[in-house]
View 1 (cartoon, helix red, strand yellow):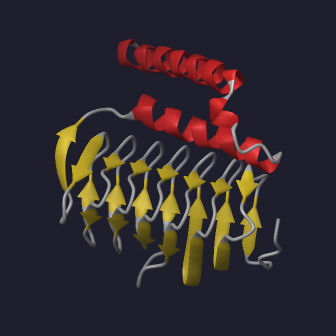
View 2 (view 1 turned 180 degrees about the vertical axis):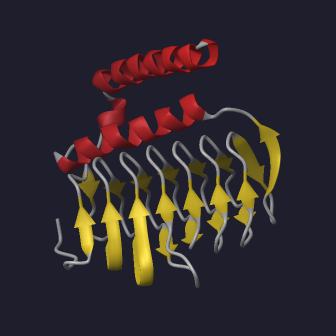
Length: 195
């Protein structure tokens, strides 16, 4: 892994592609993966990525005027997403080419649909599906299981990429692991709902 300087801190990442560009203050928790050509900048404030989250290809994460970005645990930031000084709770997914602007807050277990624009200062409740430009809550649904499965898939793939294996999702081990994780998450969700 490249040396990004003393203000960039990693805690046992799963995979960081050599083309990722990281500038200024940034902290990455255990199990994070950062994919090709992602750019993460913090000329002020700080960008923080929680455990087992993935920053996919061509993502741009840049601090806003008043805040850095804070991404929760088990989040997926999909290809070409732009984050600009927002906060995302745990178990969130931002779809391809979505934009989240300054001081927006995305509640846990939410999905920001591809190409959506979450405008500055928006407050998105937990368990939301946001779509459109400007982004609006179009549905309320607990996306915990699906979003965690997406994060699981990327973590599995990241560990494989770190070993030089670029075909992990085609393997029987991945299929078995995905099924076992789905069963575990569904049981966990059921216990929370009945508990």
